[in-house]
Image 1 (cartoon, rainbow, N blue to C red):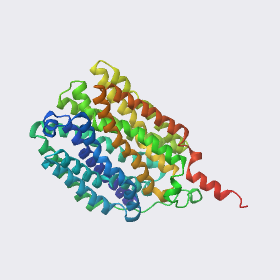
Image 2 (image 1 turned 90 degrees about the vertical axis):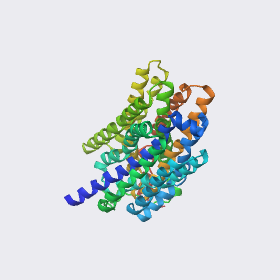
Image 3 (image 1 turned 120 degrees about the vertical axis):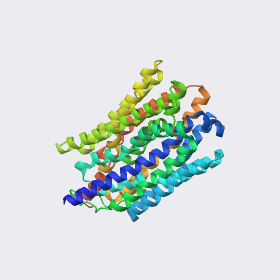
Image 4 (image 1 turned 180 degrees about the vertical axis):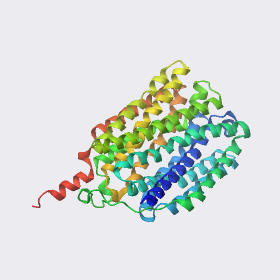
Length: 418
């Protein structure tokens, strides 16, 4: 019993570490784009900077649903191993890029490699962690998307400052491959937990039926809005700190670290708090839903900082709003797993992650275009507030227990035949 629990948490921590590596490899480009020598080498306009930040998500998003189907059929361990080797190699080879289009091609390849890790981790949690502990597990795993930028920004800034941008890409790409050794030695595929109440479990549903659910569409809208803010922060926050607020590259790395670390800490704490409330008898769906709504509202305070003249106020709200987002981080993923059937865990994770990464495509391009047109960061950051409020509406009106496919299936099977 205890041995199985230990292996379960070891595997979760390794998956989380893999996701940290993935986000370090995403963040390093946004830090490079804040460095004048990198921008000047590739002669990048604001719109081109948005394009380069976005292109990773083109291949990544396209492959999310296929990656979910692959995980449902092949498990987690081997696909993740191959994927990490591919994306780390792509990151390392970026050191040899000589033109904008070589940079674009390597970011597309990075997206292909990283497409597997997120559906893999969420599917593994859904199959191996019970509901009462799922908020903490999801908090640990999903917070890796914040620890990656928190570690990656200062590390990339330090490497660029000391050794140049080419050495930075090479060191980070090759360094990530070290993770493969403990993963191959210690990770376990795990065994699916039996349902807590078999009568409440929906049968396997085809993807077409899942896509008719209001919960799925509300989740996709809310996920897009949450991640519009997140991917602005990953791709443009370093440049915002340097260009709009006049911070040095080193100071930018530190403040970016605190912004994402705040989200990571709050994500774990909020996931654990929701678990505790559920163990005390609170409804799982309602609890996680209200945590998610509170997180989106807290994140919207970033607009206050954007409008402030004071750099101290702007930096405070950049950190505060990211910490507020942490209330939603674990719970909006765990909420999806609560409302949708376990048999479709990989597919559901793929669908939700597709919406997530559509935001990754749109946020960098739209931000770059708005900045180039208006000449400031004000309108791009006001746009963040609009999207976050749309996300609140999606979770208020669409992502509800009554709209769940599980509830619909139970209603259909319990009603008398005619």
